[in-house]
View (cartoon, helix red, strand yellow):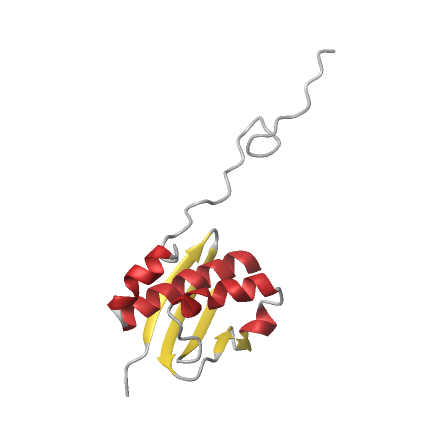
Length: 129
């Protein structure tokens, strides 16, 4: 039996560990079906997108452990993790996944709050008198 491949995906504060095996297309996130965990359809599409790009949605079983961040961050972290895991299985997927922009980690995160300000950039209201 082929060894299971694993990878890590990150986005904002969300971290996902992804385990990929040969199978029949079952995707689970934190011991739930991914359609139950990610109730919004566009988040489900995010998770499926790496498998759809290489046209093997029903060839691999994916187990995802997600922690931290919000639901959207976890979905995008899972997308990156699945894409990296597929590269572990077959490096020939690289040009297709790279062209679809699935191997890029989104570096954007929340800017820190500064002292003397209400939020990161928002100041307190100014009054001359």
